[in-house]
Length: 310
Image 1 (cartoon, helix red, strand yellow):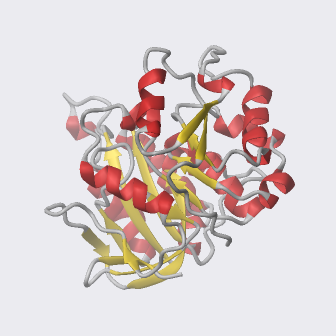
Image 2: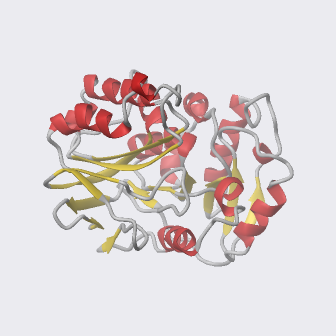
C-alpha cells in the first residue's frame, strides 16, 4: 500500500464534491478555512453545481475526480462534503491513471465508497477526515480535531503513533485480544452498499472500522447482519467502532419495540470472537479523529492502545 506524499504549506488543494451539492452560502467560508491552513485552493466545478440531490451529473463528478488526480498542479484533494452519490461515479473513474498519481485524498461518510475503490484498485492510502463545508466551518471544530486532521495529512509517512481519543473519553472493550492489519472501512451504510459489486470491500486480514449517522437501530441491525452473512466480519482480524450519531429507535416513545445499539453489538458482533474496541471518537461527531485508511494498525484491548505501525 503506497503512502501519498505529505502535504505542506503552500501546496494546492483541489476541492470537489463527489456526492451532494454544497450550500452556496457555505462555500466561501469553507474555502477560507482550507486557505487558513496554509494551502492554495482550486474550487472544483462540482462545489457549485446542483443536479437535484447531486453535485452535478455522475459523469461530471467523475470527470472532476479524474481531472484532479491527473493535474500535476494539484497536490491533494479534499472532498468538501458527503451526502449521496459517490457510489454512482465508480464506473467512470480512470483507476489506472489515478493509481499512477497517488495524492492525499480526504473525506468521510459517503466518500467511503471512494476510499474502498482507491485502496483496492489503486493501492494507496487515503484519509478519513472531517470536511470543509461540514466540520471546518463549525464553531465546534475544536483543537483536537484540527490537530488530528493536520498531523494526518501533513505527516503521512509517520509511524509508531497512536490513534487516541481526546482526554476523558475512554474506549470500551467488547471482545478482548490483539489484532493487526490494514485499516479499512468507514461509513457502515456505504460499506454494505459495496457488497455484490465490483467494488466490494475486502476485509480479509484487515481491521474494519465502522460508524454511521441517522439510522434506526433496526437498520444498524440489518446492515451488521448483512456484513456477517457476507463473511466480512469473520474475515476481519478485528473491529473498531466509532460514533453512532443519532442512531436510535424508530419510535422513541415505544423503546420496547426496539433494541439498544449495545444489545445489537452483543448479539451480532461479540459472538464472532474477534477483538473489538468501541467508542472511538471518529465519524459524524465533534471532536473527531482523522484516520489513515490503508495503513497497518495494531491494537490491544487490555491496554486499549491503537497504533499505526507500518
